[in-house]
Amino acid sequence: MADDTIFRAQFNPMIKPFLVMQIGVTMIFTVIGIPLALIWFLGVGRWWARHYFDRLECQLGERSLRYRKGILVTTEKTIPLENIQDVTFVEGPLLRRFNLSTLKFETAGHSAGQASDMHLTGIIDAQAFRAKIMAAREALRHAPVARPADDAQLALLQSIDARLAEVVMLLRQRD
Image (tube, rainbow, N blue to C red; front, side, top):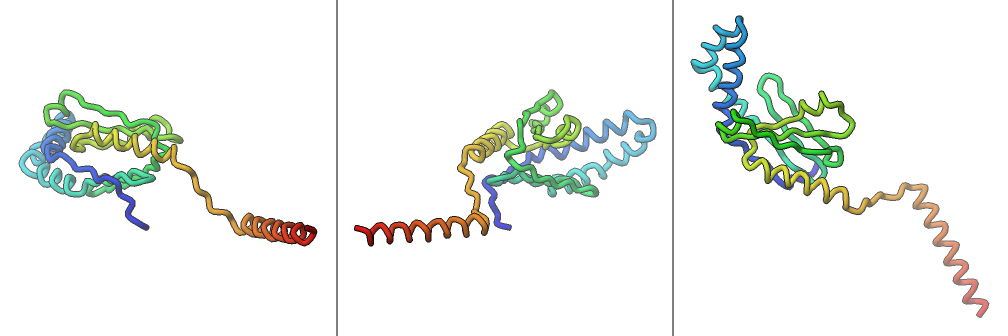
């Protein structure tokens, strides 16, 4: 498969401390997670966040958006641009504190619950990346669709062409 990458997103390294804080605080709010939060904040969280960051990928192609994230459970999704209905830019107070934002993708043919699963946090200049996705989607929608003729159509067209050539030859002979 040819590499049709138009743009490769870069991720903000501040996502690492954000993830450590977000997951650690979530652990603290559970009774069972309190001892795990201590281990998490003493180093496991930084190790995990570093490896998570190293595996983050997002590529905008001519016809699709592909992203990959995760360590133990890797999620890799390819979203056809024609299926993208909207890309929402989210920036809350905690995300702003870490100079981060989230892009959420709404796609055709999915329920709201599935669409909310498609999100990326930490893309550098997420507003500009969102604009590139939307521009690529619009360019794809307005591009002429070239469909190759199948063998039956091609044979029919060749037959019509041959008949027309015969008619032209007969008309020339009459003159």
